[in-house]
Amino acid sequence: MGKYNLDIKKYVYRHIRAYLRKPKRLAWLETLLKTLGVTIEAVNDFRDDRLRELDYNGQTIQLERVLNDVFDPVLRRIYIRHNIAFKQVLWYYEEGQDPYYLYYEGEVSNGTAGTSGYLIEQLYLFNEGEEPGQIIGGGDGTNGTSGEVEIDFEVVCPLGFENLEAQIRGFVDKYRNASRRYDVVYGDV
Image 1 (cartoon, rainbow, N blue to C red):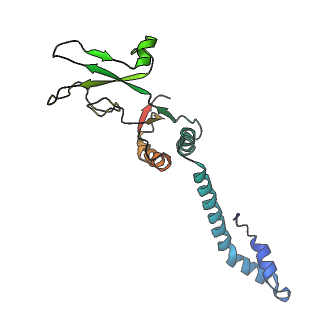
Image 2: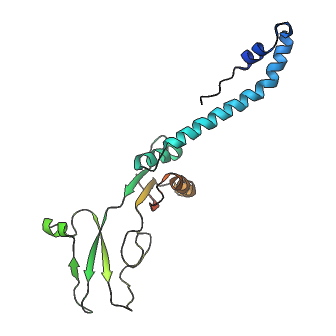
Image 3: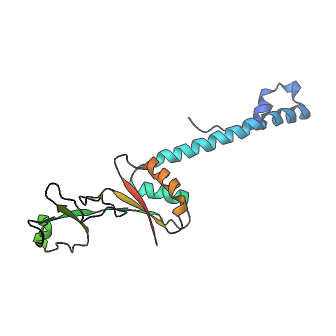
């Protein structure tokens, strides 16, 4: 189904019999049908908006595109940062001992344990009944006890966009994949 193109003058002229085509009558009928033309333009604009929205999907580049189109169309400073996280396991045998570090095999063989440039998260193991006080959950993306990453990606917005967080979250919720968790962070971009 294409766009609805309606030329009001042509429509009136073609649907009036020849002996009724007086200038005053044609002008009066055109005036009556002008509101139909405005309504058709609104329908076409709505259709274009919906087709553009259907073009977006949950891919990172598409999500960045829609956020920048709506909130930062000129400078396009909003981007998405994915969390690359590995777990580093600290194992305590007895209280007061130095922890034993357990690494992934690739890290140890490359000699890059903890220095690979990736975010290496720590996982503390405790005996039953002990309180895990080493990791305190907060805005750092951890759940406070195991050190596992709770978010899959971060939407990085420039400073000054804090008052638009509800709208940004609404757009991200609309277009992201349902199984992905995210956070909105602000910083110099």
